[in-house]
Every structure is written in structure tokens, then in C-alpha cells.
Image 1 (cartoon, helix red, strand yellow):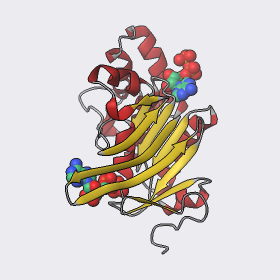
Image 2 (cartoon, rainbow, N blue to C red):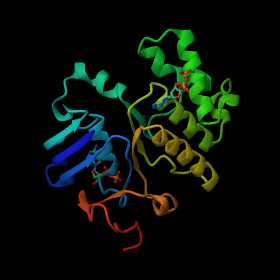
Image 3 (cartoon, helix red, strand yellow):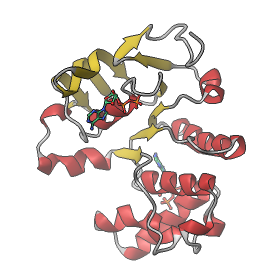
Image 4 (cartoon, rainbow, N blue to C red):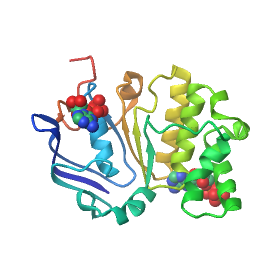
Length: 227
Ligand code: ADP
Ligand code: ADP
């Protein structure tokens, strides 16, 4: 479903954010992306969403060459992706429900249908009771779950999450992970960047990055801080 073939990314001439990455993610997999800060985790996720282009190598998502995607192809790619990135803030001038409806409204869904699906998405992450609240009235963990509801309301095939539990307490982080595991449970492919050791300890499949390179793919990847 996602293939990297000898992918490198240089933001500047003398600094490689990613070097010669080859990996593949099968449909329905739940994979954690680990490694110290600056290792290239965000860059790898952003390239799958065509938010950054590879400097060399090829990336395919569902058979499409993402490095060469035209602007007109972006909506088709992004429709299949649920993006949970930290810089994507909730809009504070409207309700939680309106925030979750937004991706459906911009893709032309009728309002009634959008509201029904947004409520269903909020119900799935246990926040239907907060639908009418403003995001600012919610805890950090609840806000992060609203961001997840907004990311999945379009029923994407792939979820990309960048440090989805950063700045959350253990209980909130557990709820966020529970929601992500539930989507994996219904067949959604999930790629989650994290250096949260509690999460990595439970993870079945970890891809470990260091200085932009893959380290020991698969077995016995070192945990951050453990080396
Ligand atoms: P991580 O997510 O693992 O912390 P990043 O992918 O954010 O790593 O960063 C990898 C490297 O690329 C770092 O050295 C970072 O400074 C650099 N980098 C990331 N984004 C940019 C950018 N927009 N411009 C220049 N350098 C960048
Ligand atoms: P409805 O058919 O009334 O929209 P569903 O239970 O089918 O209710 O879906 C409710 C919400 O759950 C959807 O709006 C979507 O956000 C999410 N969802 C359902 N199936 C998937 C899926 N396969 N992948 C991601 N999200 C999904």
C-alpha cells in the first residue's frame, strides 16, 4: 500500500533528513515509527502525504507515484489519508461538531450527511457528549481525539499520525491509542511516529530511524534512550 524505494530527502545541500530509505507498508498494518528527535520521522510521514517531495527515489501509495503527483492529483491522494499532525489546530470559533464536519463539507457532502457522519465519528472516539462545546473548553487529550475524529471522518484507508500523544498525560494518551487501535481493527493502515516508550513497549512492529537512516528494520530495534 505504501512503498519507499531508495528515498532520500535533503532540505539543504549539506543536511540529509532521510537517506536511502526502502520500506513497504502492507494494507491493514499498524506500524510505529521511532527514533530520536530530528531522525526524520515527520519528514517520512509528510512525504507520504506529498507535503514534502523526495530529493531522490520513489514513493508509491496505492500504486501512485507520489513524488510526481500533480497538484490536481493531491485531493485524490489526501482523500485516502487521515492526517493527525500537531500543527493542524482545531478552529476555536466553532463547535467541536463543526470542526469534525469541515472535511466533509469541503469535499461537497450535504450538510445533513456531514453532521450524521461527524456525530458517528465523535461517538467512536467517545466525545459525542462534547459535540456542542468549543474546542478550547476541552482538555488537551480530548482536543487530540477531536483531531482524530476530524482526520477519520472521511473514512481514509491510511492514517498518518505524528506524535499523537505528545504533551498528553498517560490516561489521555491511552485513550488516543485506543482510538487508533480501533481503526487498525477495522482494517485501516496506520503509521504512527512516536518516541513514547509506553507505546513502543506494546508495539508489534517498529521502524527505527536514526540520522535519517533505517536502523535494524524489524527485529530488536533499540528504543529511544535505551542505546
Ligand atoms: P523528527 O520528526 O524525527 O524529529 P524531522 O523529519 O522533523 O525529524 O527532521 C529531520 C531533519 O530534517 C532534521 O535535521 C530537521 O532539522 C530537518 N528539517 C525538517 N524540516 C525541515 C525544513 N522544513 N527545512 C529544513 N530542514 C528541515
Ligand atoms: P455511518 O454509516 O452512519 O456514517 P459508520 O459507523 O459506518 O456510520 O461510520 C462512522 C464514522 O466512523 C465515519 O464517519 C468515519 O469517521 C469512521 N469510520 C467508519 N469506517 C471507517 C474506516 N474504515 N476507516 C476510517 N474511519 C471509519
